[in-house]
Amino acid sequence: MLYFRAASNILKARLGAKVPLKDAAVHVEVLEEESVETVPPLAVLPGSLERVTRGVPGHTTAAHHLKMARMAEFRHAPVVHYVLPDCYVHRSGVEYRGGYWGSRGPLRQRFPKAPVAEVHEATFCMAPAAQTYFGHWLRDACPTALLGQDRGRLLLDLRSDWPDAARYATAFGLQAGPFGLLHVDELHVFSDHAQGQSKRARYNLLRTRLAQNPALPHATQRPVYLRRGATGAARRIAREDQLCEVLDAQGFDIIDMETVGFEERYRRLSAASVVVSIEGSHVNHAEFAMPAGSALILMIPGDRFTIVHRGVAHAIGLRFGCLILDPSSDGYVVAPKTIFDTIELVT
Image 1 (cartoon, rainbow, N blue to C red):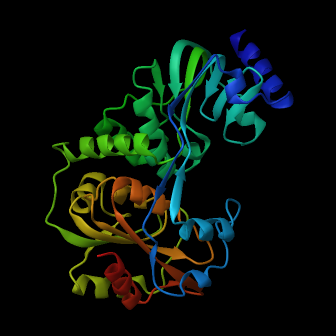
Image 2 (cartoon, rainbow, N blue to C red; image 1 turned 135 degrees about the horizontal axis):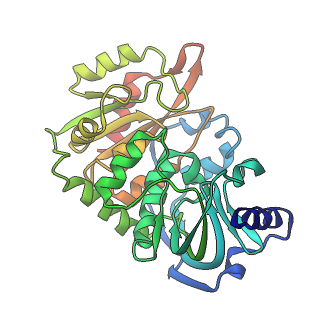
């Protein structure tokens, strides 16, 4: 009976009027007000941004991220806490009275074939982007979980295709795990996508918990090249083996995401004076490990340009620079000199 009631409410929410979270909530609290801060200019070689041709297909435009790249100020949205009554929660999102908050997949995904479990109070940590991208899970859902640790059951999903998620949750001290279809009397959700002082304090706490974990020792300080390989969406670098040889000769530690496990990867990244890598979710591993004050240099394809890591790096206390890569039939082209020149801009 509960399943059919859930299905009926989900269908009504999908087909009916969409009530905003703030209007459906029985309690709304601003935990941090909007703020604006002046930031250093982006470290990028002259003329590089002019080679950007488009943003990430299906997500953002080049114009949007070029504007972010040139910003002299960051505006941080407020952190807002909502309490929603009588909700149905599943891995794709939250069905509340008059609306839905979650990923926009097919309607059938919102009818999980599972019995409905009753929960009195819970916190849903999985904002839509965190359900799709590991990077957002690590840098958004996990900090949000800290806001919800004293607010009932923590709904922080651990996707089976993200093997490092469980390791991070354990190291962070977060009680996370899979969940099916829940009916929740009192659900806490947060608008928590900005990187103001609240998020920075939580980044620092999570990074500190990682650093204090005795299973994750540190290494001797070196610059690092973080090789993405075939992990995630393909972003192949032309003649990458030769690039790695050049960097190795200059004292770089080459870390391959495909072959180096979680503990060893953290150990080496936690001693990085500089990390160089192509843009992608794997960069979040470096951001949560690198010492504050070290430098992150991202190689960003000009035909899928995104600059989101500029804000994350600034919030964590890293110096940030980037270089723009041109596509070729063999992959994205990287001239080693541009890497060294960009490092000079930020060190």
